[in-house]
Image (cartoon, rainbow, N blue to C red; front, side, top):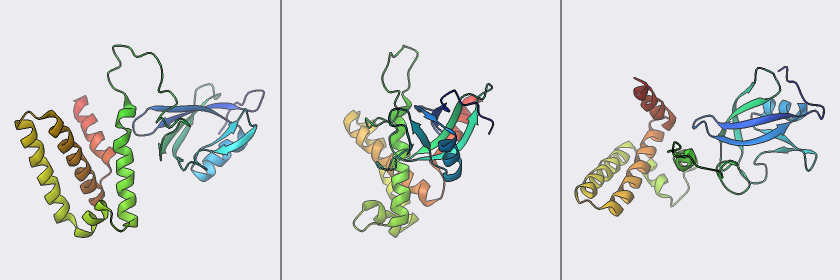
Length: 205
């Protein structure tokens, strides 16, 4: 990549969630950290305060799997699309850009939907590891018929709660339905983002 580093050998790196498109953080890279990022498939940056390389999530476990690395038209900034495995900010927030002025036009906070991605990742891990005593493990071991039964039961309970105008109950039952639907999608090998892409395509029509 023909990147134009500044006089200190650095280039700003904007890190963005590949699925939600939310900007997660702004960091800096030098030639070595950029090379490590491309070679390892995880984000590496250069800390200006510590004057050393650092691998995002090396100690916290909140790593970022690199989907693509692009540079702008002037070749003096890079955009890193990632799939985060946990919050990007050291404060525990999904994004380092979680504070600021909210305008009336800003109606959706993508950070609010991060739980769906985190839940999917957890379910995928449960399917692989099958920890003893976990409810998700129980569902996978019972198979697709059991999962389908639970999806049907939770859908019925959502209908009942809505019919009864019970907002509190509806909130809980809707959460249960989303969880069991996520389990079904993982069992079927269908990433949740594919469902979101379908919704987006319909919305554009």
